[in-house]
Length: 99
Image 1 (spheres, rainbow, N blue to C red):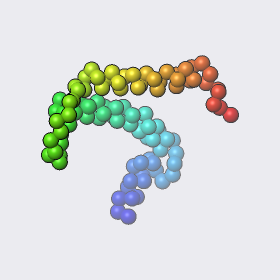
Image 2: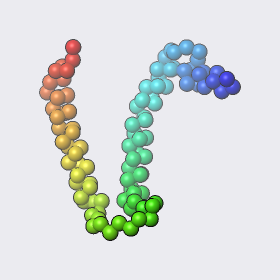
Image 3: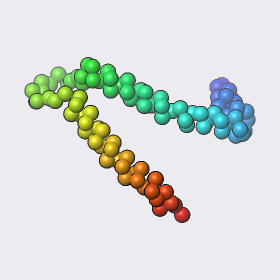
Image 4: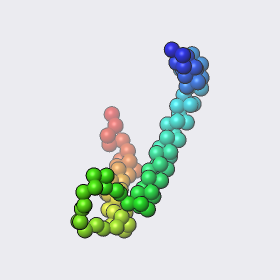
């Protein structure tokens, strides 16, 4: 009740959904994926530098492989295999899944 009124006014730009609301949410919609991608890259960088830890303290003597190039190659291959059919569909027959 105390911050709800202020939150609605700042998020919507007024008391109703209007042009400032659409502009603010479009900007949020545009910038949020870049922020998520940046945080993901930072997370992977720290994980690559420090490695994952073992909070339970159970000794695992299994053979480990380095993150790069093995998992990097696997991730790039997965990305390529997912993007190829998507881009093929989007570029060569964009109306295939439409009405």
